[in-house]
Length: 121
Image 1 (spheres, one colour):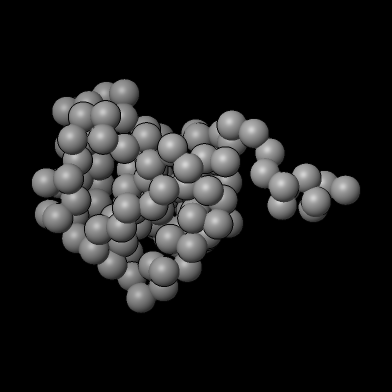
Image 2: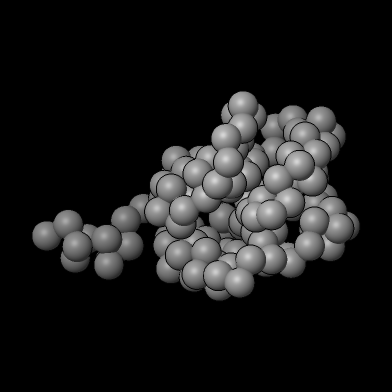
């Protein structure tokens, strides 16, 4: 189980609870923040294994925020979900399955859970 894996999810979209649930269901500790300014005060070096920013309608602001994180803490794992194209290496498609897939690549499971073993049988 990934209970020790902490993900800061910055997301103000109406369907944010679906993203939170998708990550929590896979065992990640999800710490939601509605606004980038709120998250900025919580972004301490080493505080989270991964920061996920849902750009939503604030694409440029999200890019600036992510670039700031990358500049201040280059080793911080970071993803930005967006429905528009970006040349940043941390930018991914905005759909939930894609987000989950990328999170699991960055924070692989430490061991298979009983549910995983049951679905594999």
